[in-house]
Each structure stands twice: as C-alpha cells, then as structure tokens.
Length: 121
Image (cartoon, helix red, strand yellow):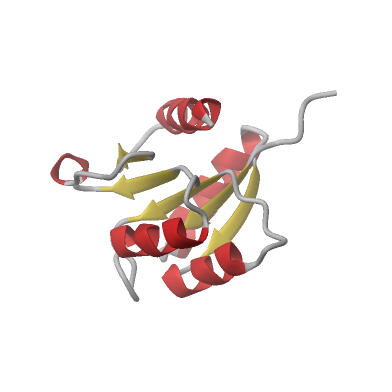
C-alpha cells in the first residue's frame, strides 16, 4: 500500500485552468481541495479538519492577490508550503517556504515542483 496521498489546495479563479491543474494533480495521485478565490481558500485553511500539505495559488485572484492570501494563510498555518503560479514568475520574490512556477507549465514541471516542495517538509 502506498502512503496517504498529500493534499494540495488549489486556488485558481479560472475554472478551466483550475480543473486542468486538479486533473493533473489527481493523476499524480495527490488528493486535491479546490478554491475559486482567496476567500474560499481561507475558509478551507481555517477549517481545523482540513488536511493541507501544500497550497498552490494563482497570483492574480479577483478578491486579493496570491501573496496577500499567502500571508494570511501563513498566520493560520505557519509551516504550510506555498506554490505560486504566475505568468510573470520572474518578477515575483517570495518569502521562505514559498516557490513560484511559471505559467504555462508542463505536467512534468508541476509534478517535479510539487514533489520537491513536499519532500522538504
């Protein structure tokens, strides 16, 4: 039997992009939670029953940007690894424990990035 799959919270306001990311992560045998915006993501993070091993968020969200979301999530879950997805990855500097993946990314890039971030914890 394999270990319990890691759970990834995907925060993406574009439903089609979110669905694609979720499909890819599920194919890679991760368990996935979804949120369409920062508010929804914070509800999931605030829920003490939610198991989250990594949060992947778009930088451009309608209600607050991904970095602000990350700051608020870190207050609730200080050790949570956070992965930003951005079309402007080279312009983003992120705090410790957070990384950036440039859009568009391949399935392999996503898998490698997520696995490398999860193996640290």
